[in-house]
Structures are given as C-alpha cells and as structure tokens.
Length: 297
Image (cartoon, rainbow, N blue to C red; front, side):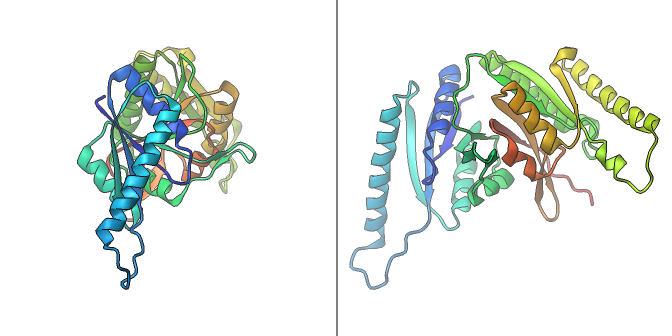
C-alpha cells in the first residue's frame, strides 16, 4: 500500500478516519493525503473582490484548520499532502481527484448514532459508495485493538457471481488485512430461508434442510479454496440485514469487508447479497470493494 486518501467532511470530526489512516500508514509506510472538497462559493457579480482571491482565502483558512486538527491528534504518520478543491456537485470533484491520484484506499468518517443503532449516511457517503473507483473504508468513532476482528461478508449462492469471483476477491482482501494487522479473520454467510417460507407454496421441512445444506456446501468450498478452517466460517439464518449486524454486535467486530456490485443500466449499487439498508445497521468500520459491473437483465 502506497497511498491513502482521507476525505475530510466539514460536518464530521474526521477523527476516526484520521486515526485509521494513521494506523494503516504506520503498518505500511503509505503516504496519507487529505482531501477536502467544498461547493463552489456563491460570489455576487457586484462584488469588488475577485473570485480567485476569495477562493485563495478560503483555501488558506481550511489548510490552517486541517493542520491544527492533525497537530491536536499527534499523528505518528505525517500527512504528506492536504488539498482543498471546489466543485459542484461535490461528489464530482471527489471522484475526479480520486481517479487522478489512484490511491490504494479512500477513508471517510461516517456519522454513527449509538442511541438509535444506525449510521446516518450523508448524500456524499452514498454517492461515494456508488461511485468511488477504489476500495472505500467508512469509519466509526472507535479504536481498533492490537489484533482487530475482521469479518468478510459473502454470498456463496449469488447466481450472477460466476465462479464466486466476487466472493473470492473479498476473501483475498480479508486475508490481506488479516496479514497486515495480525487480526482475526471470519467468513460470514447468511442463509435466508424467509424467501422460501414466504413463497406461495409452503415447502416441507426436508426442502428447507436441503437448502441449508446447499448453502453450507458452497461455503465449505470457499473456505477450503482459501485454506481457512471450519471455525472461521460463520453461518447464520435469516435476512443478512438483521443477521450480520447482530453478529457484529455480539462479537465486537472491528471491520466488515463487503462487495459493491453495479447493476446496469440503472447503475444501482447492491452491497454483497443484500440491499443497501444493511450498511446503516453496522456499528463497525466497513471496507467496500467494487466488483465488475453486472450486465445481465
């Protein structure tokens, strides 16, 4: 890992994103770059101060604020670059700069509310989830332990995941992070029997057991292909948007690795085997890995 971009959100403390970047840079020696994108300032046509001068003053002020924030945190890994840009919409500027810099990872803090057990993603967060061309880590305000708990969420039964390409890529990413952090790795898969139980024809118990067995066999093939042990496989029943957050809370997971899949032509992004709503229920950091677009109907 050579380059980390931390997106600075004016509405967040940004502390957890900086802490995570500092931690990763300390392990890898990567450069850490701060990126703040502001909307184009509204400048009156009757004003006497040139637009360029106004922007320059804003940049100078924001750079000082960033420096003070970093100084107050006493970061071990130095910030190699701080960049202030203007764009409307903001997401276009962010994606453009990310594409130009080609970082190994982009990190951004998200607004988790423990009182309601939900993460309140901003519009920019959702746009980054859909459009960020590199791995995206959304952080929560908590420190990682010396050996973080890492969970890779996969759907071993995806019909559109040829040869489990997405699942295998996610597991490889999880193994890389386990090696980097000397963490504990688990593979999570949820068996949603509700889809069958809610069908017009009520299946008998043997059919449900056969379905569970098929899921188990698919997951078993995955862990064996990556030389994982059986105790690293976590199988839960139910909808993943309920079972995964529940598991994360029970076991104090620090990082969940998930896949982002694009469905043309609407470019709707689905997260792993579930709808987007699973994301706002996770109280830990999330690492989103983009897969190749799906071109089916």
